[in-house]
Amino acid sequence: MKKIVYSILTVVCLFALLQSCEKDNFEAPGSSFFGAIKDSVGGGLVETELINGSQIEVFEKGGYATPVSQKWLIKNNGEFRNNLVFANTYDINLANGNFFPYRVNDVEIKAGENQRDFQVVPYIRIKNCNITHDKTANKIVASFSLEAGKSRVKAKAIRLYAFTDIYVGENVKFNTTGTGFTQSFNPSKTIDATTYTLSIDLAANSSLLKPGRNYYFRVGALADVTGVGTVRHNFAPYVKITL
Image 1: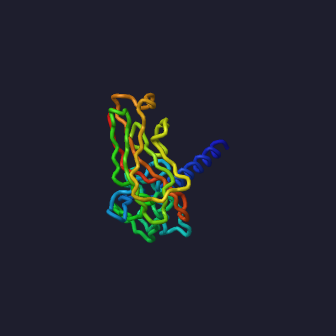
Image 2 (image 1 turned 180 degrees about the horizontal axis):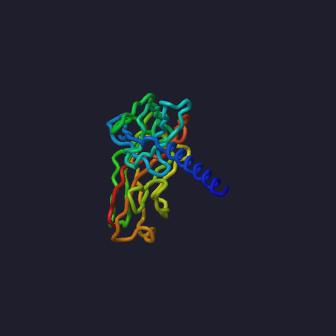
Image 3 (image 1 turned 90 degrees about the horizontal axis):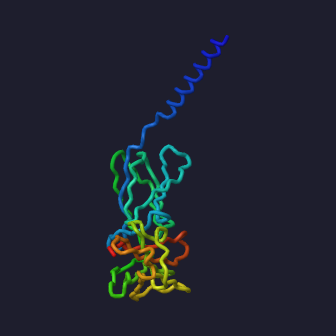
């Protein structure tokens, strides 16, 4: 009797194993989707931040009655790449970022490499950004101006960020002390041709910023604009400085 029971259990286990293998025997993703988020004026990259920055929301359509949202990350410099994509038709939604919402439907992603750039209107453009080490004043100094993507955009805040790697931004930064590195506008400020200057006092932040090391500095601006969902910071490219 025990042999019969063991035989039945063995058959059941083998059947379950075969069923499991059969369910897992799906074809792996065979497509790559890559490109960049670019400014519709001039074609420059629209920079963001990897943590809590702009994302690409996609809906895989073919074979699904109710497509499920997927979120794909955008790198700090505005480029993106996903090497694990199924060949199919997708709706792509670019929203809740640092540019005006943009959507494109029925994008066909084929097997292999697929390149696609998206032309968007950033909320704020950080123009003529210059970040230097003023050794005489013992400060990191940034000068720049702002340009609104559309006339209804206002500036809510600006900041000079510092950190030890290239991912520096609003969510990856030193908690620097002082007052010169940030400025908030209440009420939000109409964006004009003003040249702004922000600075980080190195003496006041000597526990964070030490001589002989590389640090990364970056200017960011937060827009005030309604009716667009979540608004995230716009950024200029980082600058590496050895103190």
